[in-house]
Image 1: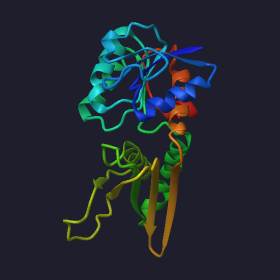
Image 2 (image 1 turned 90 degrees about the vertical axis):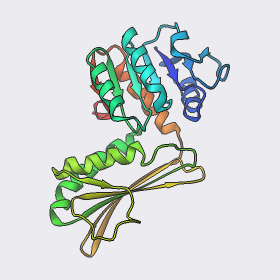
Image 3 (image 1 turned 180 degrees about the horizontal axis):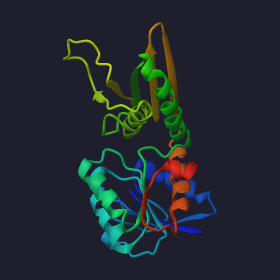
Image 4 (image 1 turned 135 degrees about the horizontal axis):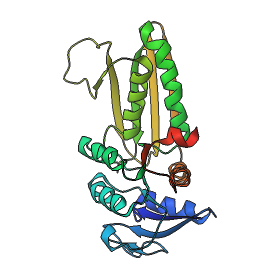
Length: 251
């Protein structure tokens, strides 16, 4: 059985993660950390990581970007592998994760869904064929009203997959309301929608002459992210230092 510290235990995803864990005989959450709550779960929850003394095989993080610096320091100091699912990280934080992975195993992904990670592969293959033939890539992402970062980390991952498949450098365009110019063939448009209780929709368009190809993923429940996080935790437990992503998990 894998023992887990849940970072961000009292948030919306933290509650989903703990529910999924309760049904998984191979996982046990031994403690949680959340700056905004205590006694929100049936396991010990601390307000700061430094208060947490429970031994664990892996830390699963569904917190906020402002809490990730302390997480990296804690996991590195104690040599506990980390599954980092929080999005909206700064370039400095991404670099810190990369540096820390030289000392401890870290898996970072903007989306833990198996379907999204398969979509990334499909998009790379599509971009390889379509972009040299004049197809323009666009991404539309939709999330609930509480989501803080825009565009989503998943949308940026999808954009990176397009660029990787095309073998080209692209600029990202987040809005055209102040632009009076034709579309640059080396840009990827990324549009964000925020409202209601939308769990997550990512729609990738390749718009060509007289035809459009659309690849779309819709999440109906946050449970898919929790299940993916535990698959990643099982993969990461006991591994040596290194930086991993979900492609390593799904093979």
